[in-house]
Length: 378
Ligand code: FNR
Image (cartoon, rainbow, N blue to C red; front, side):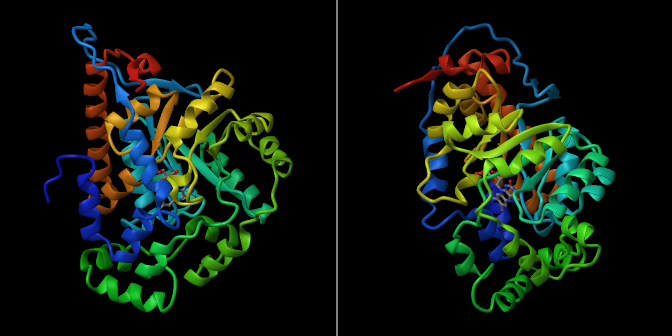
């Protein structure tokens, strides 16, 4: 298939992946209303078109948390990325390194921290969930630091996994899931050979590295299932700040009061996110949440945002609304599933090119020129 736009990768991924995996990536919580709101409200932000502004050739690099990013976006943590392409975390991290942007490795990755650091390198960020097993959390922090990761993304919007009906429909979970997955794999031979047979996809490397033994899928599900803890409060997390010398970013903030709590905990930045609409269905979109959070804490911390960003135009919209930079989630995962490392690199180039055109047409020479003054508030 010919790829001409970032969203073509979604169609290509749908062809490549067994249905249970495509739907796992593509779906959201319950009715998926919040997931759709992420796209719709972002698309409804309008720019002021300005002409003859003499912007020349806009520059896309920016500085975030003292780091130089060649482009104002990073790759978000996505669990089980090595299920969508062989050793997928390494492939995506290599594309990020080549583009000069951060890659965030999920707690629940197929490739362990050590493998990604050794085979990809670059500006690697480590993501950690709030889990009951403090030993695992401490071990992850130590391994991340020892492998050169200087930025921790601490995700707080998953005290319990969201309800994902699509996963039950398509065989990711629910009755006879293993049989359904097996049958779907048979009709997707490219994936079955490349990932299913060659990629050791059922090894969840970070957890294995901690446990010191191979994990079956049911061991893994058991570990995750018993480890989310809805009773944890901000006070219980102070030890994380004390144990982590690098930058600490709290991911999953939608409310200004939570943003203030994150700062009280000692965070260096926050990610305004609703997990791509995969957690609380009915929650506001990040476009709706961002302005009040910028008003509340924007002068005191670094605010990043994600959820629903699919193009360079969307990147410009979210930054103009107040984010310093953004994270891409599904958009790079579709590209990875369709074309591996090459696909992610191409996706990054397509998004960068559209961002540059958008900046030219609104009269922004640098990323810091993308402010609310560029938006038409209708
Ligand atoms: C995620 N996300 C996520 N976030 C996180 O902190 N740790 C994780 O392991 C995962 N896993 C994960 C798996 C899948 C399949 C998806 C789609 C998402 C959320 C992710 O980091 C990001 O917040 C959203 O993907 C952003 O929304 P968009 O860009 O996908 O719409």
